[in-house]
Every structure is written in C-alpha cells, then in structure tokens.
Length: 130
Image (cartoon, rainbow, N blue to C red; front, side, top):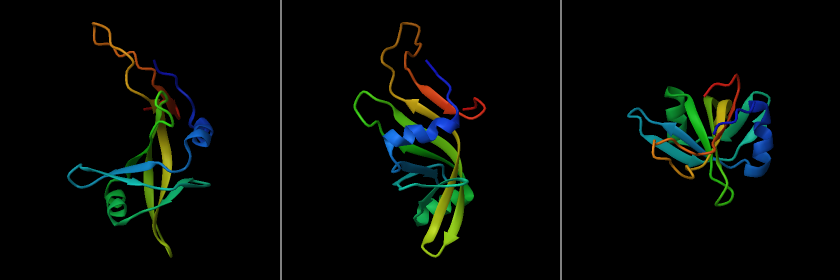
C-alpha cells in the first residue's frame, strides 16, 4: 500500500524522527558508505558536516540517501533520496542535500501465495516521483 505525500510534509516527519539520520553515499565501485550525520535546515535544503570519504563520494556521485531507523519496533523507517552539493567551509566540508523523494518504509507484514507484498509503505514525494 502506497500513500503519496508532498515533500512539504517532510519537516512534520522530522519532528518525530529528529535531525540525526545516516547518510548513504557510494564509492567508485558502487560500494555504499554509511555515516551518521547531524542535519540543520537552510533555505535550499539540509546541511551536514562531511568526512573525507563522504565528501569524495558526494563530489563524484551526488545522488545520496538519508536513513532514519524506525523510532519504535512497529513503526516505519524514513528514507529520503536527494542530491548533495559539497561546500567548502572554514569548519571543513559540508554537504547541502536537496530532497527529491522520501518514503516511510517497513518490512512486509505478510505475503500472499502470488508473491504480492502487503507492506504499508508510504511514499513522500514531490511531483509523485520515486
């Protein structure tokens, strides 16, 4: 089951999930690199500090994902896909992430005999894209 929601509602979700997701980038061999970040909001998206590997990955492959684990055992994870821009600052590299799509996700509750998923994932997207 999918329920589209505009990205304008993303900040409402963050009031529950907080501003400390995992940032997922990929290296030149398509291996994921996962790091815990603290986000702040600016007029163009979300900003976070970047380490050496995340910064290098983001410069070459700006498609990234943010992952918030479920706050409780029976709730959804929050996954946000976006484009990251690397900014050089006095404090070191930072990333500005422009969200493109998001989804609340949890494992399927059950499967029927025709292999149809009964998950109740809820996409949050701009222009209904995912």
